[in-house]
Length: 327
Image (cartoon, rainbow, N blue to C red; front, side, top):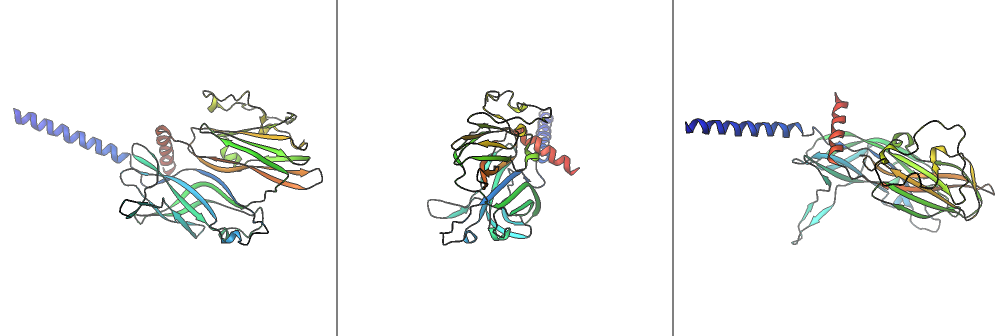
């Protein structure tokens, strides 16, 4: 009788172990999943009195984030973009007390079955530009090689690299701020009488569901467009948050009637809001263009760098969506 109970107990243990193993296996990724990135990066314009050309610099560094299995994590060892190999830094080296160095596992967040890891790539400017202000090179995919000798073509969102075409001493940024709840602000002052002809955001269509902006000038005389379409004012993803959207100065960027004029020493504020529960990574800049009273063209930028803190539920939803795309 005791042997029978013992056998039943062992069978239950085996079944439990088998069930746990099957559940564990069902949660494993076939390959890493790269997150969605919307990046626009610019090289600074070289001053004429500088001896070193920016082509001799380290270029632009971009950090990309990806999900990998927690119990068999993969490390990126090589990246190619449009056939060109770029410098890869997956976290550098970690030195112990005795001086031995080991590559670090650059883990950004930890989940039940996965790590969110990052890899930084350095791209030299001669790979993608001729050196003219406004030159723009875009890509959406990378060939990624891992330390297990596997490779994949990773869709990383959208990236645009360009030579900075900003013009100093016309519309000058005096303040920039951000917070972990998705809010950021840029404050500019006009150093000359000028006309703002447009304010644009890169990847506007792609990020429209997670990004909103309000424009405000000191005297509050920006006009609304006459051909406004019906649409939301306050983003639905701020309904349960403490952000005082209604009382934030300005009007929605999409509703601004361009052009509008600014006198000398007037202030222009861009109040920007991002859905903090999104899973996409943003490093970009709103572009302000126009002309001065004397007819001189100008370009100014208001930068946005926002990396979300991602919750477990969002990761599970993202994985389900990616698996659905493969079917």
